[in-house]
Image (cartoon, rainbow, N blue to C red; front, top):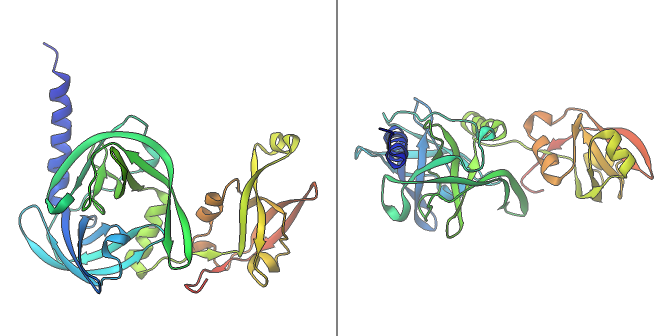
Length: 309
């Protein structure tokens, strides 16, 4: 007799829940504004936890409670509001969850959310990937940025789920639950190459270094013949160039259309943001521009993005 599909579904969700529940903590965060709450995921055997930056805010620590009832204090190793990720350190013996790769996800794929909504520890919900490639605006002081490739799911998320795990059917964590955008509309920051670099930087240095070119742009279509030749439909028109910035020193001018930077095609603001991580600071990057119908090559040397910028 064929297996009941509902039983197979239930068994899969139960297996993922059993695997992840010991690794997901309920947080109580101490901050100047009072106490907050959320969730976090143990991701190393040494007791490093991953959560959302907005969960810890400006707090320096708090307490974590695990599924077995154990509690421990945690300290904030580093938080990055521009990716909404934070790394904590906690002396705990909880098993580490395995981080997966959100770049392999498909729309309609089963996912399981584990967290502590409304203070209810160890809650599990399931759903599917509703959409991929969403963008989530975040802010850090005067700086704003879009988090790319955000995962949209219909797995029920509620306040307190933030910082919890979004896992695939194998139990690997593919996202960090971050926001409830509406009924049946939850968002998670993906675990991919970019966010792994951010997590590693937070764990090692307590901060994330970002590069700065000093140019603001907007996507514009390329001329059809050029688009066909380059295999690229859009570029980024410079609508602001900060005087004395790396872009200004490289002779990038207003209305220049940025085609590529460092050999990477630039067809959106997000594409440029992805490129400007710490490893490009101080590195001369070739920049190809479209200027008055002609292609022009210049070199720009990104500087570190400082808090005042």
